[in-house]
Image 1 (cartoon, rainbow, N blue to C red):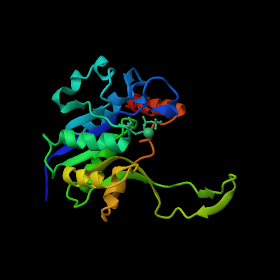
Image 2: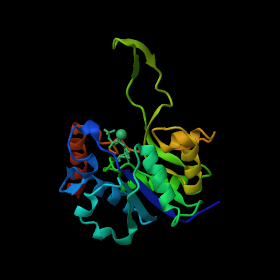
Image 3: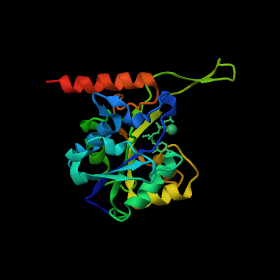
Image 4: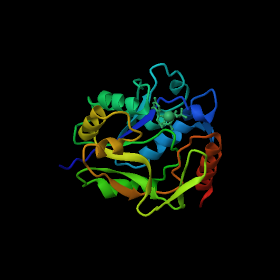
Length: 233
Ligand code: CTP
Ligand code: MG
């Protein structure tokens, strides 16, 4: 079961409520471009990625207001976002079915992770291209973890051995992912749906710089990361 083709799928139909801004966060400005631009560019930076599908809200009017010509036909917007991230990804997988074969790889990547570096993406593709299940980028937990009680006092110290923080891209074959997401209740990531089928996705070492922009202060950090890359010799 080997496939040569890799596709990206970026759910970008969220409202970005936790950012506390009127505009959805995928369109917030990051170095003169919408955040979504950087996430698309990061995936397409690897020549192995055939096309990136972007899942937009059906009522999205903002996507078209930005220039995307530089990506040509490697970028394909789909206006089929749903009420939850799970729905948006599932709808996107269904819409992409006319182009993508069940054995092709799908790399699901959050619009809200604009700082994915080529090195980590390349490592994910290299590590999983011949894998039976697929897997995700993640980072081993570095901090000591505490479980709180209801009053905010420490109830227990949780051993961090073998604990990872899950990131995106999450890379699975299209057919498997469609099946996994179609049969599970709402889960926060694709790997969880694949795990629910009794499979064990692989964890591939990512980088802390591939942060998810959730709160206003994360945007500044993302800007600093992207700027430092631009200015590196
Ligand atoms: N997403 C989506 N469709 C939804 C909800 C989320 O496509 N109905 C996307 C977001 O656009 C984002 C990614 O899923 O790229 C990760 O979700 P999250 O960071 O939670 O973004 P939002 O849901 O937009 O933010 P919030 O939860 O703060 O409202
Ligand atoms: Mg959300």
